Length: 210
Image 1 (cartoon, rainbow, N blue to C red):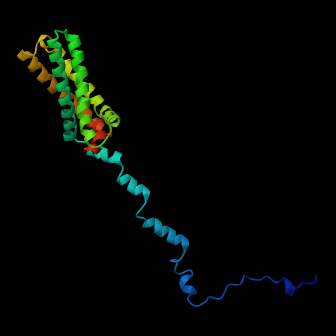
Image 2: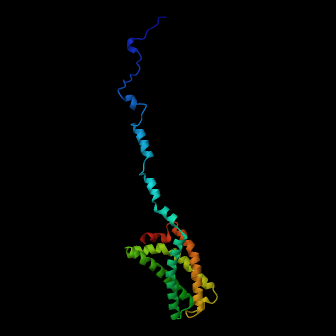
């Protein structure tokens, strides 16, 4: 059988490689500093303005969690207790002066406790420049749970204290039972306030206006 030679026009050509110019070997395979991908990786490694980093560092929620302390909770509780004490004593004084029975007198005292508790908070945030409507919203968010827990503990103590419900403002028993009820209310409400402040709720919403 006759052997055919490869025709000159059908020879397999190897892809020609451009002659390296001066300095090309320096920037070719040996040095990738000019490669776009490498530059991108370097940018990621040294990126100092990453939104995620700054966001986590300055996130208000995380800061609120870290700042929840017993001292802060005690201060918030004392703030509520002051308003509650003013409202309760005033309500009981009015009820006694009008010769009301125990139930309406206690209801009035509780209502006034909320009124004065909210009023103290509103006074502080109004000084910060908030309008009346916004200040009321802040006060409701800050104090509602705290005052409610405080009133339950406070009035519950008076209910179980022997003879406290029938004592008048001129009786030592009235003031003794009232003082004891405030101590119990403070002890019960402080952990609640600490738990809420640690989650950015309760009195945590008014810290920015102080």
